[in-house]
Length: 417
Ligand code: C2E
Ligand code: SIN
Ligand code: SIN
Ligand code: FE
Image 1 (tube, rainbow, N blue to C red):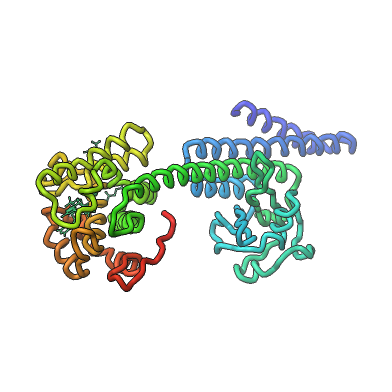
Image 2 (image 1 turned 90 degrees about the vertical axis):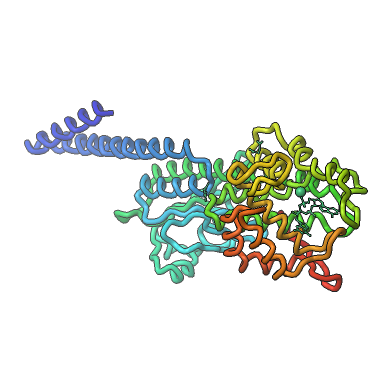
């Protein structure tokens, strides 16, 4: 790299000295031509080094949002544009929405109108020097954002099946003028790369959703006589996520817990129905059977190196441990109990108390909150209890909507997990 730069500089100084000697017109134009070539090579070199730098950074990033933010910055730098936006397709609403638009408000536009709409419908790149001369341009967005668009370069983001997943758009060259063919080639490259990231993320989400639904259905296979397992699982999963978020865990971790928590009682599938559905108190022998469900659950869920499965197994095994060490199955205490289980345990008990069970009526919210407060430092981690109380403004409305408090109130169908 260094060597090349030096020789380019040399070429430039030589050219200057010849120009200084006022050589003939023929030589002059030849030199101008060479100068342009050298300038253009230097420009390529500059751009390649930017592309390489970003590619290297992107190779260690897995989160789709971060990847797209990186690519938008890359496009702005390489193409020297004032703005760069990645639009994704919302097929249901027939709209394109700005997934990433640094420094700009989120934008939604109909997918068959405007410049990006035209790129979406035709699947072809558009390079427009002055959009205000183009009848397809919709000046509404400029009016809203206060930004004055002039030059637009917009490329379709295609997946391997040639479907357009979105549009990669850059606006206004920072030094004015229009985007050229080299810019078009670079943006096409970036759009393809971005499409690859989006496609991967969609596939990943799809796989995750399928796996999750499979397990939720299995978790819900334990049926009880007097209450809807699925509703209980959904509620305690939401409560767990709300508390975890309040405690400051990362969004990814919170999401994993939200999906792992509803599998906590899957081991009850190994407990005889006669015990699960017994209207009254359990005998000592029945308790022995019942207390095996965390280990049954762990057996079902453990042994995978999938992060979600691992957390599910941990929660299943440890959700009846108690902070003071008197829980089951292992009698772990305090921070020896994994935090995900400490959170899920509180969410589970809150929902168990505020719901009717075949062996007990539902408690009032006041009674429930009092019991939880009394158990802080005994059954529950005090820090989890504190977070739970801070979350009540979110938790109570969910409970009121989705947990039937009397026989008169019918259960509202819960949303998907
Ligand atoms: P579950 O019904 O999902 O209850 C989960 C947890 O909520 C219980 O774990 C307990 O910590 C809390 N909980 C539920 N009801 C009450 C209550 O009336 N008072 C208090 N203080 N806490 C309550 P636990 O006790 O380890 O029980 C695990 C599972 O064993 C329960 O899951 C339920 O399926 C079963 N079970 C517990 N007690 C009885 C009972 O008296 N009769 C029957 N048939 N099953 C019971
Ligand atoms: C985390 O985000 O993983 C840590 C948050 C916490 O421990 O509160
Ligand atoms: C496990 O045994 O791996 C889960 C519970 C724990 O770590 O204590
Ligand atoms: Fe349980």
